[in-house]
Every structure is written in C-alpha cells, then in structure tokens.
Amino acid sequence: MSRTIPLREIAHARAGDKGNTSNISVWVNDPADYDLVRTQVTAEAVKAHFGDQVKGTVTRHELPNLHGLNFVMTDALDGGVNGSLNLDGHGKSWSAILLEICL
Image (cartoon, rainbow, N blue to C red; front, side, top):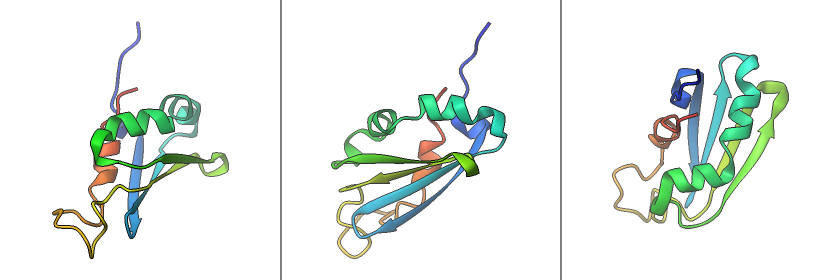
C-alpha cells in the first residue's frame, strides 16, 4: 500500500531572493529519501505548483552529496523587494509553499 505525503514530512527548505528571482533550496532529512525527492520534485512540478506566481523559468540544480535540490525561479517576485507591493517581496514564505508539494 502506498501513501501520499507532503514534502515537509521528509525535508526542510530555505528561500532567498535577488531582484525578481526567487531561490529555494530543499534539504532531505534522511539521505535514504533523496532519490524519491529528486525524481518527484522536478522543475516542471515546482513550476506547476507555484502556477502564475512564477512567470519565468524554473531551473533545478542537484546537490547529491548534500542531499539537496536548489530551484531558481525567474520573474517570480512581482519585481522584487524594491519594485513590488507584494506582502512577501522577498519570497521568504515560498519555502513553506514548496514543502506542500505531495509525493
């Protein structure tokens, strides 16, 4: 029997920003879960999860020795901290949003 779980049950994440680009890193808690996360949390899945919030591209960088993935999302912060009226112009809460992806 298989079950679906949110990513937050097996990983944690950190977010950062530079201008209109959001950067989120996902770190798997148990190295045994890395392959599951790597195969299911793709750039396409992240782009679909964020929907219209990410108007540009999503690029994934793998960090296998650290059991992590880094996602760079362009045209994602409504212009960034200095150019947006968005309540989260930094995109800091985006790591929590990404951890809601279900595996």
